[in-house]
Structure formats: structure tokens, C-alpha cells
Image (cartoon, rainbow, N blue to C red; front, side, top):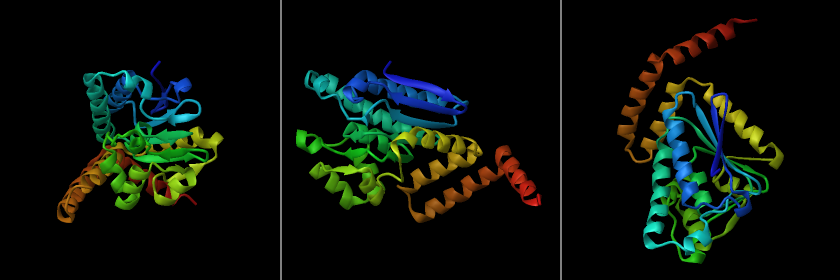
Length: 252
């Protein structure tokens, strides 16, 4: 199975399942990831997503052996799948968490950056070996990495191919949490379940407004914030959450 998926309550758990190849991504696996994100977007029962890798890696990146045998048309298909996946992952109105175990390199890091939140196991290694092989990044990485860690670190990582430890990744903002290896899955799943329990209109509009703000002026962002916040206030789930909060504060 290319991508192992299962539901845990309202959280979709998606595991890249190619352990013997350090979860290297070939065309079938890229297609499966795109299909998984499409499913998450379209199924109302899914309120959050956790993406992880089986075994010793989140994903070591593109399948180099498969790439070497590709035709130009095959390579174009694979490259376009990264672009499609980025649009799908960033366009989901639900939180996406990357639980990064082991290696997240090249295309694997590209997938991790498509997530809204990145949590790393203490043994994780993150980096971009593309330059050494004569490639440039795809999958929206040049845009996302610039915004996540800043232009200086983004260019440094892309040009040098430096592999970062989990702690160094945390220091520069590439990930937002580092946990013990044996705690990663439970920690990421618990966070996803907590986010999935929040009123969905608020979560949807948080993700939309932050993504739109990356490409908007302050004036346009203020207008959008007001529109989205009013929509949140009108939603039944938010009204219910407000009443529950007020009632809980009244308890002695």
C-alpha cells in the first residue's frame, strides 16, 4: 500500500509506507499523497490530518533509482504531482500536521513544509540535498521555506545541502516542537485531536486568513480578517463554544 490511511476519531492518519526505501517518493506514492489530501478536503468526517512516515524516515525524498529511469515525460509528471500536492495540502480548510521521524530530505522536506505544523522526533534530520545532484526544489518549497525560516536560512539550506538536527531545525523555526522519538506519534495525534475538536469555521478561517495574508497588503488583510471573524461569530459551533466557555467559568 503506497499510503496507509486510517481514521482516529475525526483525525485522518496518513503514513508513507515504503519503509525499505526510507519512504522514497515515486510516482505512485505521489499520486497516493495527492489522493489522500483530496479525500481529507472532501470528507466532512475529517477534521484534521497527521502525515508521518513508517520506520526510520518521514521520507528521504524522491526515489533516485526510479528517477534515473524516467523519460522526460515521466519526470514532468512527477514534478507536477509535487505542485498539485502543494496546492491540495495548502488548500485544505483543516489543519495538517507533519510528524517528522528520521529523515525528511529533498522531496520529503517539501511534503513536510506543505503542512501547517511540523513536529520533529529528537533524532530527525531535515535538509535539501538537491544542489548536490544538480536539482532545484519544487513543490512550493522556495515560497514556503522563505516564509517559514526567512530568506537567509532558506538560501543557505538550498545551496549548501546542510542537514539539520531536530534541535537546529527548532532553533531556526523549521519545526515548532521537538519530542522524544517514542512520543512523536501520540503527541502529534493528541494535538490533531485537540484541533479537530475546535469549531471548524474558526479553524478554516484561521488557515485561510494566514495563507492569504502571506500575499496581501495590510489593508486587504484587515478587511478579510473582519469578514472571516464575523463568519465565525455567526457559526453555530462557535456560538455553542462561547456558551460552553461561559458556563464553565460559572462553576465554583
